[in-house]
Amino acid sequence: MNITRENIDNVNAVIKVLIEKPDYEKTVEETLNEYRQKSFFPGFRPGKAPSALVKKRFGKAVLLDEVNKMLSHNLSKYIIDEKLKILGEPLSNPEQQQDIDWDKDDNFEFVFDIALAPEIEVALGEDEKINFYTITVTDEMIDNQVDYIKTQMGTNEKAEEVTETCLVKGNFIELDENGEEKEEGIRPEEVLMAVDRIKDEDIKKLFVGKHPGETIVFDPVKAFDDRHEVGHMLKISHEEADNLNSQFKYTITEILEFKKAELNEDLYKKMYGEETEIKTEEDLKQKIKEELASNLLNSSERKFAIDARNVLIDKINPELPETFLKRWLKETNKDITDEQIENEFEVFLKDLKWQIIKDFYVRENELKVEDDEALEFAKDVAYAQYSQYGIQNVPEDQLESFAKMILEKPEEKEKLYNKLIEDKVIEVVKSKITLENKEVTQEEFNKLLK
Image (tube, rainbow, N blue to C red; front, side, top):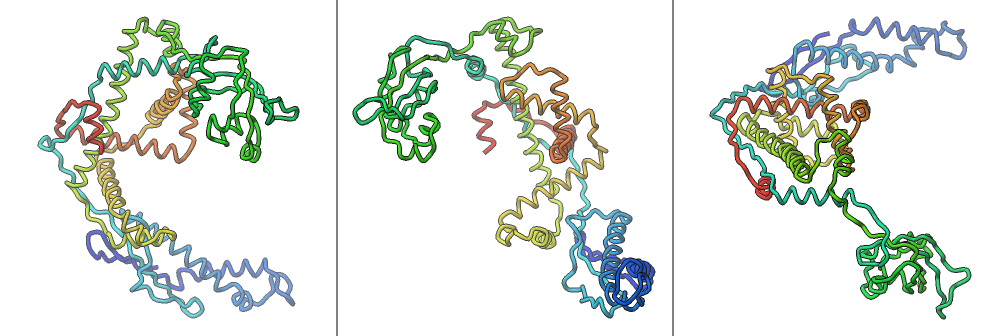
């Protein structure tokens, strides 16, 4: 077997693989002999069929399989042994690849185009300046978060009179055209409704001021202007809801009014655990300020990472084999169109350039992610998910269990490791350049993201 490479330019090369008869002959003969021992041929005892007959039936398939296995193995080995950093995968060269006659040829030459990752140098110093935007935590932001907590931790309490913000629970009875109760009519009980969801203002006014035990007669379809919602409320099928045209008597059994939570030590313990040091509203606001600052710092870091990425891509601008890459995208994504490739190619190139730059930093600085780092980051991800549901005081063993579940999913684990590596790359960049610190408002920051 003979493998040669011709570099066309810095990022394109052609590899030729010549597989000759002595390379595969012995293995093919051994495989055919196994077929001879195992296969059934009419008129011959097992293992006694003529070799020529076995070769006629299986020879071409066995040859094709063996040559392809040798090609795949040796091409991959060559790329590894030569330490070639390639982009995408080798593609058959349409100009130089000759047709192969598997019935007559003894020697087989395969010609591949490959794309080489460009060699780059990244020279950054203190003269390179990138803005780092710090978002100011305002009193308004803190007050809004306090109000959100009071709302989130609030409860529905029994009330004696309906207001527009109340929930009412009651029993429906369908009425006939004379206003009498239908014996076989629709009669769902303990139906909960939000008064502020009633779209018809006249019907909404019928509820306001009512007390438990009082009744209201109204058309639910007119009240909510949504037959799908009415069907769920009355516990009837979609078809019944579509044909519904009745008045209903609704008897209120319970009135619930939402009350925001009071700021007190019990609330602080629910949020932050029994051992919390938060005792007063001022303590809470200070805690919120710290949490907001931490969250906003994450936003600042993400913005810096985007800016640093753009600066490095513009500064280094790695050379890429664009013609090869378009062809590779087309051949490996059979459903993609030429128009899609053209429309998305610039974004693809930018991502690929960033990956090449990241790989440079990883090699130069021997960056890697340790298992304990991954676990801690997965715990942060788990805690963030709990926080979305207002759960702040999560036991450590529960967090760790959730984090391990995340890491057991290959796709999630890969995303997490990639994020940690990218963070390490950004930290290296940050250590080599000059940060221009700028304090901005949330509104100003949001404009910068557009």
